[in-house]
Length: 442
Image (cartoon, rainbow, N blue to C red; front, side):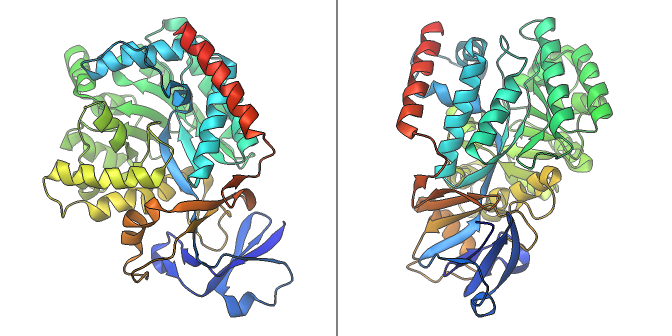
């Protein structure tokens, strides 16, 4: 459908200027939101009308830090018991990523995206690692993005841990992908320069990456102070905290994403704020790995744009939002703290982060924005209005069913059924076979 109008739904726009709209309809033309107005003003248009009565219309959700390749870990029980975060990396993730093939990278990404569509997520900022199959890995994931019909920003995780030849392959993979997609010719794909973490990158590596980041005028996507061990290593070996060291190499800029930030000092937070970079908190992952809880309240106080990611623990952004709020209550030792700071991560800050790469309006329902939207089955039993809508998102909508997911105006799921042309049963059978083979290599 090149042109259609959705009516009957209450609209949550994620636009603070008019966040809640009742009695309005939304018109889509060629993948763009062309008009939002009272239904009476649009009912005589000559196009298809979609009655969404009893539903909530809201933007497609954005995941600001994810790992598609983690999809094949579901149910894996072969990793050795780990007593620290560093052991989790060594016993699970760094064993897994070495075994990934290009086909694994494609399939794990596609399955993750199909699951994300079912939970209303239409934009994902991903971070990939497959050190023994680096060249072409981002193109395989990009192929999955196109097949799924959503949007993604991709990067390859450069690290020294598998040797300098593979480090250099990772650097090339990032640079080539950035050159191909950064300019925005493909509306579904964007690119950042990926790095694992400061503690797995030497000064020489950071210098090489810095030169390319400057040349390509791009941002970086890196894990920063996820665990205290990252800070300890950098202080012991370089005499600097993580963000201070990255700043010395001009790697903290207004397009950059620092994932986690659990153990950042106030001084480091101020540097991030001054440079205009974003921090993306991943509360479920941090709790699962027992590394701590990021001080989102302090970050927000200092003016940092704090986004929300899942770090592959889930594809359900509304679930992540809820856990983030409970975690912040615990972090602040105050059940009244952090409500707007956490709510803003998903509702306002993730759109602001994505707009750096996809342009104005992304992640909101405003005229001129791309038509990335979801319909949620939700008939509120308490008043839903401009004052209460955020509370409804966290305490009500988060437990409701996403019935439709739309990206660039294209309906990817309707009434809970994917409309992508895949035989989902066959696809999952192929995924199980690939995962089984991966587990046998693990």
